[in-house]
Image 1: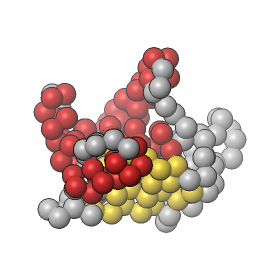
Image 2 (image 1 turned 90 degrees about the vertical axis):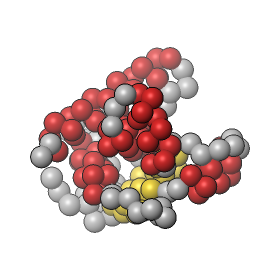
Image 3 (image 1 turned 180 degrees about the horizontal axis):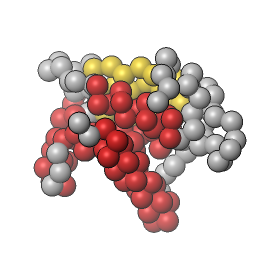
Image 4 (image 1 turned 30 degrees about the vertical axis):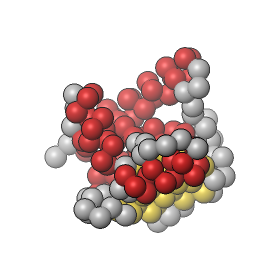
Length: 156
């Protein structure tokens, strides 16, 4: 898997969060989704108060949410055989505290939930959406396929 020098994964939580799995997943997603090695992607892990502030500021909705995406260059996944996409993909912000609660409800572990959220955020950066049932079905199927493929390849 190529290196991604323009991939930035940061922990901005007070408790400290190990971002190594997110970094590995992000690199996998960039490769699999046809991004050039120098495509820029930023992923930040934040606490609930920071996420709540972003949620109000950008979505005009109260409370912390699980993931937010901020696309920049409106990159899209290239067709098979086309050149890899170059530019600034954008920013994904994830809140592990919300993810932990969702993981319990969903019946899987926190790592899986974080992987789902990061993948969901990156797919949004590439123009995927879930505003209508057909889009939702396609986006969520793609998300699950990517997470499952990464999990198979990253098992210790």
